[in-house]
Length: 308
Image 1 (cartoon, rainbow, N blue to C red):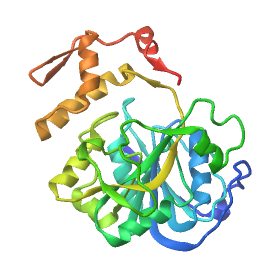
Image 2 (tube, rainbow, N blue to C red):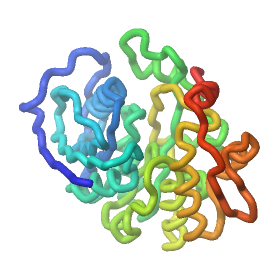
Image 3 (cartoon, rainbow, N blue to C red):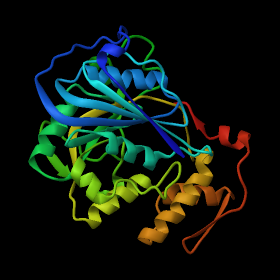
Image 4 (tube, rainbow, N blue to C red):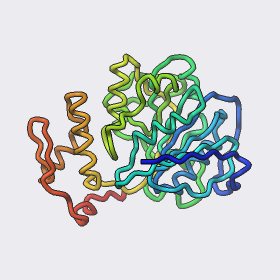
């Protein structure tokens, strides 16, 4: 694995001309926004457009690519810092990439935003409000955009109209309120944490390779350190992309990472997926021990593809 780092300023980038969102800057927050990237060019452009519309300015956007190269980036009113992590296999180094983004960040507070997410205009301001007041882990709120949502130029009104909350999101939070959130339901799609606290936790465990488990491991580590987890109203819209149910395309990664998790926490994560893999005859699941029996064919994987 090797890492390449670059820093861009707004003057060095091209003009943005597609997304119809107003820019209203009210204050400056000592925040670095961190994201990791692979094969999501249009999603990255929408993520940047959302940050460009933030009502609160921030230090920088840090982008770490994984086994991929960045496309040409648009002009923005903030600095963009980039790094690349390349591996010798097809498993994306999610944990290592998030840790690298935090390492490069200069802000005292970090907002992690998944590449599929578009931050609402007040999301950075809301994370900043909470991070200034209490040292905790803050899970943002997510609305999921439907298939075909970006058939024309988007606005925040259109994002709201074409999205819905996830059934596992729990109680909705409004304004500057916060509510306790179950550690086992922590998602790294959109969250905020102080940089010093992230470092004290040791970041994401890089024993996890590829998809699955590293999110819950991070929140369990936060719980072990008595760091409270809250859900807040800082909203991001998750851009639709095809997915698999169950995710047979990630079977080996999920099984490997589940074993890592079990050795550390004495409980199996992603139990629903593991049970589905077992029911379909791909793995043996007995007494919390896992063994891959066979790998799915491309036809079997594609049969699990969800387009909605």
